[in-house]
Length: 355
Ligand SMILES: Cc1cc2nc3c(=O)[nH]c(=O)nc-3n(C[C@H](O)[C@H](O)[C@H](O)COP(=O)(O)OP(=O)(O)OC[C@H]3O[C@@H](n4cnc5c(N)ncnc54)[C@H](O)[C@@H]3O)c2cc1C
Image 1 (cartoon, protein in one colour):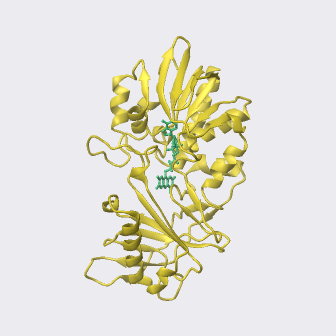
Image 2 (cartoon, rainbow, N blue to C red):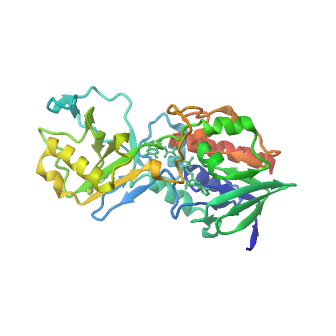
Image 3 (cartoon, rainbow, N blue to C red):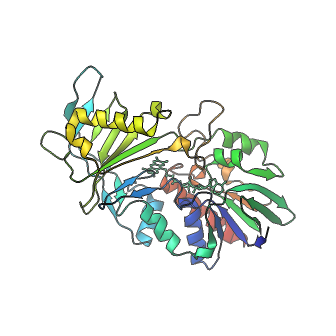
């Protein structure tokens, strides 16, 4: 196998990895990105559909308080728009009571979506990089720190670098990549017990020729204690030329087949809207705990956000030649897109300081 030599290797081409590469590029520094999946974006994954609509299978919303992300979007000239929320919602309290149409209070803190889909952010960052900087379909398997260098072996090649930046969720990092010498026990322990944000979620979405849910007697906002969809929202495009509903499914349906989930989703929606729900153009879903490059099972129960942002991730390892980045490692909003951008910015400050 040919050994490629490079100065900086970044493992993972999700939002953190791509933002690091973009920020380094702005300073004239080229880094190599290695990505296990056949696509960029990691937990950001917009499924673009025929007919102009799209479904966010991963990250969707941001708030104005997500200042790192908001600034990056401005810099990249990407627009956001407010999530459409009817003032009414369908609320299903119990399985033996009828669903109700309830009035929602004024939303003091609205959520926003990225125009054209969250993957626009990923595509825009990638557009500043050279194609040769990014290797897709290559899973990093081992990392070996030796002398002043780090040897990285992927499923396809060996590489040598001066600096290594990882962006995997910490639990996945310590479970799937073998380090020699081993990572310190304290770091391993915390990483093993760090929650991967949204790793258990099931996203479902349906596109339609018309937004029939926007009517006098119904709404696209659904909150259900009965399920299997627990919450759902209008997911039409900003331009209002592509129509969809998108939501989350109860975790009990991880083990069901795609056909079973689809049938359950349609049955639930039929209760609210009638037979028109059968006229969908596309049904999309992602069961994130089946995504091997995001989720790996925990040994014991882990609370949501447990150990997210733990300072141990921001310490120096292997004489500063390893930086552990990624959304879960960020000081603020760890687990969210804003955390990914903040982590990228701090990583770049650290590495340029060293170089
Ligand atoms: C269903 C869902 C909904 C979400 N909703 C929101 C939301 O509304 N708002 C919000 O702010 N955030 C949301 N998030 C969280 C958001 O997606 C993440 O914070 C962000 O995308 C994390 O980016 P990252 O680059 O740090 O990690 P990741 O996106 O996980 O990137 C890590 C990358 O490493 C790659 N990789 C893994 N193993 C290897 C290996 N061995 N070798 C090489 N590459 C590897 C992965 O394929 C991946 O591309 C959501 C996440 C999910 C899953």
